[in-house]
Image (cartoon, rainbow, N blue to C red; front, side, top):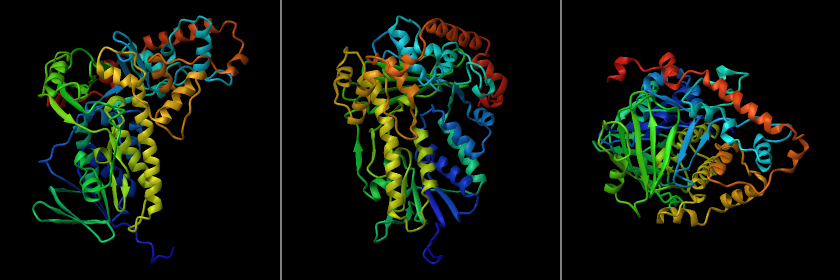
Length: 509
């Protein structure tokens, strides 16, 4: 390619703020370090953001590291708490619960995954639970916390963690970060999107008549999907026949007792509710299917189950589960709600924003936006969305509940072929069909399968090469050692107070 045919991007415009917009702006500011001519973000204070997603997955910490953000300071500023996983209550059956932990479960033995050894032990009468060997699960169960990398060579080193965050404070933090590095914020509402003859976006006209031009646009306009949906008319893949919930009621309450280091996801008659504890308050929500429940009924159910006094009025949120047929078309890339949405059961929204920007940087185009780059981007991101979709469906389709029409419909649905194949394979001997660079690895699938009562008919034959005499006693010893080590750790509340508590003046604000 000659210099004459290479036309580097001179300006990128982000349409919309919130977590998606300011994450994109902050990452670009740090990634380009001034090499790009201009980054402009257009948003309006008159258009509210959803701002209720308050839970993350471990790769969120990679986002902070990539930005060079001090994790302790971020936790203080956003009043975050730590998250070791998710407790699922009443999903398999009413009165039963299980835990999806972050990090490892046990350690490989010889050539076999620990899970396979545990399966053989269970087949021989061993009674110990799988999560007794997960450091994150044991810490969560006991309300304890430490940074796993600070506990190298101990049984808790294999744990991982994420954060519970205040979404609006995260957006504010990232805005300050981005503007300090040269991102320009324009206050305004987009009234018109003008296209070039080749279908590319040429310019935006704001409500007050101002014009915004750029070489490339990132659509972070939320469910309105102003660019990728309305202007470019990219179709939508609707997954609501697999994920039935289409509405949520969110409310925040005062804390009652110390914050727990995990998210609670408790199944309800026609959906589920979340509880996410932060340093200064608790986020609560009820995700439900409007086919079976009205907003008023869902709100009443949520308010009857919350702990602590509400600090805001309950807020309804309508959504449609699915994704755009293309997340990148021409010179427009869609992030966040503009590109797709998977209900927040596994807290993946911010992760998909970060992944979207990561792949964008890997495939960075020039002004001509070669179609091959967009095609590869769409392939990779579609794989990510479908992987997460299937993992979330797993929580529903394996239920044994039949007490409401909602749960019977979940139990009896026809599954996506890839998920059905994965379940069928797992039922043979615990084998997993894993892709490349997926978010949810073996420990996650093992935890949910086991928690929902999906167990293989046998174990992998290679486990038989391991001498089995004394294995059950060794497992008991390992579980007891982990329990003892965890009992000596600070409580979650103590750890936050010692290392990253929000300043008292901020907590009162």
